[in-house]
Image (cartoon, rainbow, N blue to C red; front, side, top):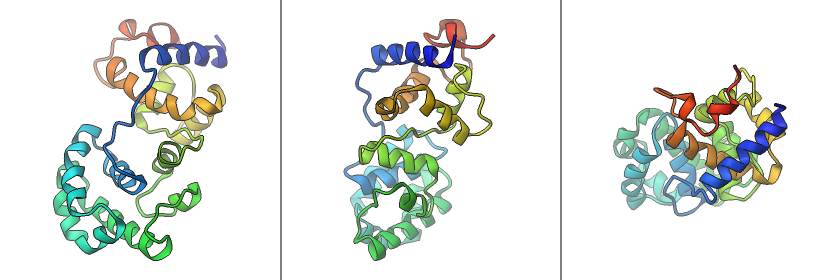
Length: 207
């Protein structure tokens, strides 16, 4: 089966199972969403959603975050892991937003990418989910699913991103990103996965 045909069948299944996927990270606006995405790096969304209400109660704007200080940020986010690095990045990017962007999160992919702690995946999530631009964010989980389903042979997430963009219609990229996240959690876990029971792997995995 050609990749485009396979992607079309996969999209039909994803639309049936998760027709209106919601953003899994609790947030109020683009800034709190950016902070939540940074906190979710190498951490579950569920754990992040337990911590962000406590953090945003203390600081929900860049100015408030800078005032809170790096050490206090670190103390509040410790349960999500990598707290020292994440706290430094959150503090430093908040300072940049205050000084250079009038406390607003930039909508440009390249400007987002230049912020501390913001990689390609985080920037893609922001421009697609917060600002409505067409982007396909690829994390390790989506990279894994794409390889399982034979949609990519990419050696890294950027190569996989390019393959997924070629396989799915541009207007679906943001939604498919979310659908793949939910599908992976429900049907296609990293460990103890039985392909025969998976609605997609059962037919899509390359023999």
